[in-house]
Image (tube, rainbow over all chains, first blue to last red; front, side):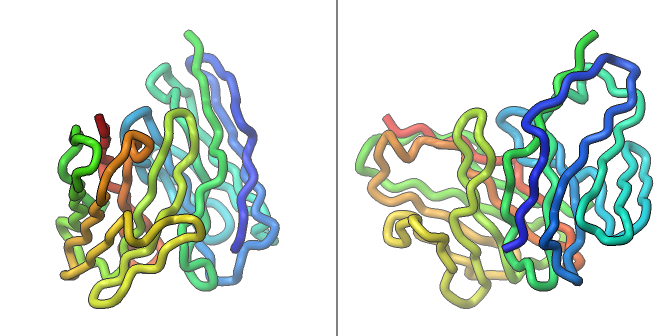
Length: 110
Length: 114
């Protein structure tokens, strides 16, 4: 099973851009990369998904290099409400289960 | 995005009783659903993969006779915790893939066994 590795935690301040990088050296050809946000006592919420290059939506950007062995979630101008745990996950193709890594606890300070 | 809903959101049961948690895909059909449990400040742990019309696939270390999973329709999977004990108290979350590669999660269900 492909595994993902992320920093355990990150600190930021309101208004800053935050970049969280995830390593997935064993990603399979048909795997998609998806990032989720989780608040305490809630299910993970979909943020963004990509296969390669760059994807942008109204809340985040996702950068994926050509070798796809890593991905970076970029959150522009974070606010206190962005304090949460962020997970990157692989799914699709050879990865037929959704396995969670440790996630990254982002703490946004005023 | 697609909607996955769980019920109940919170449940308290007595030791030795059984409790059922439902997971529904509200606006799409799901032949596969995933069940997780999560302890405070820990990541989600995959318990089993629920398959519509066939037996669930359990992860290593998960007791299939204790955590009964039924996926009787394309929009409903249920997790029944049988003979519940206090150590089964946890946050249970289900998810379902939509459009092939995107997984959507339910709101989660808190189980407290007293």
